[in-house]
Amino acid sequence: MDIYTTSSSSSSSQQEKKRKRDGGVFSLMHLTIFLTCVWATTILYGEMLSYWVPLSTCSWPHLSPSSSSVTDDHHFKIAVVADPQIMDSMTHGFPRKSFILELLQFYTDLYMRRAFHSSILPFKPDEILFLGDQFDGGPYLSDEEWQESMSRFKHIFGLNEQTRNSYIPIHYLSGNHDIGYSAYYTQHPEVITRYEKEFGKRNYNFTVGKVEFIVIDAQTLDGPKEGRETSSSWDFIQSFSKANQNPRVLLTHIPLYRPDNTPCGQHRSSPIINQRVYRSGFDQGTTYQNYLSKESSELLLSKIKPVLVLSGHDHDQCTFIHSAPSGPVTEHTLGTVSWQQGNLYPSFMLLSILSGNASSVSSDDLNHSVSSQLCHLPFQTHIYIWYLCQALVTIVLLTTWPTNGFSSSGYVGKFFEFIKNAWHNFTATVKEKNDEEDCEYEMVWDAEGTMHLIKKAVSKVNSSNVDTSTVARGNAVSRPTARKHQQEVTVEMGNQTLLEDPKLPSGKSKVIRCIQRLVRVVKLVVVIAAVNVPLYMMLLFKDWIER
Image (cartoon, one colour):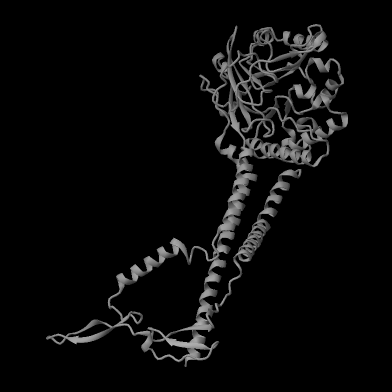
């Protein structure tokens, strides 16, 4: 009988430990599934859904005409992009074809391709306008590198893809990163020839609806007055000095002059850049400038008389109102569309233009014929920071999560156990006898014949009075306990007690536990990665492959 009881107790103990162990694995499985789902959601948002946000937070601006004859059906729509500056070996000084440069180029190009195809083209613009600096090291690149950058530019903005977007007219401005300033292109005129072969003229005009757009090669305006390119640009500007019937929009890569420390409005995210003009010796022209000179800016405004000025170059947003002879003129400097060009908040602009189909348009309507709306793209740097933080949290959770989980230990388990006991006591109608209590009950009848159970305390049995039988050293000893149906069994070997799981030396035990925990973390990370890495790669190449 004692041997049977001992075997039952040992089996019950092993089952209890197995149940706890299985419960711990079950808890880790739930944690792994939860983290896998969180990572999948994060990747879907960071690599796809975030590029759809501008579609709900931004919209085509409405014109505010005084005449009721002008409606939304009389609008042309232009999407404006500034300073893509395709990354090359000149950007950060990394060797050409190096791994780190290839990696940076891939993720920079991928961001702009996603932004263009998922955030800009879904607005269905009628025309697209680039405000210059298509390349980064454009004037300094060899013909081979320049053609590589041109191929990447066409791939990013879908110029090779035979779709509906191929028929959208695209207009380009020349930037200082495309042809350089006057001090450079006067010594290397081939860079201008190379640019015009792919992007067309640098000084030209085009009309959209009722609005005339004047494109200026701003890099030539403050060059040597006797220079051929400078004279050509100012002759082109002079041709617009006549009175114009339609409103005009001036397009210049380099912003017009503004006083130092001039506020740029609420959309500015970086400090204000003040005017800097560097000129080369021997009167060869300008080597760098933040803004056009004050004289050139005033002359542009007086000759062209624009109702709006759009510029780039600064890589950050700025809105400034100029005082011109024809009245106040608003200039919008548009931030870069690339997340690698010093602006954490890339952007683009939507322009609504009064259509030429509008009849009976008053002069006041013509003055409000252009309306603009700034739209922000996903904050790619913040997305990568979120990836990093989430990776750290994942490692910490997988490392510190208890083996038994929170379902069978800790405050959560105790809380549910308390709720369970409280509910059991509340719903109980008959107080049952507890066999584990050290007492007994006596039946007592009162005068009316009703029976009551009265608890009667029982003194503990002295261990010396318990019938025990000791045997030789190394044998099992069975002792009855206070419980009726269980016995406690110990195995004594001299003065030592053998445990079911003998402990290792403390130093080796800690090392083994750390190794086991590390192996567990690696296995669970592999499980999470097995689901999310293919998802991530699929999203990368889905957007990279030409359509």
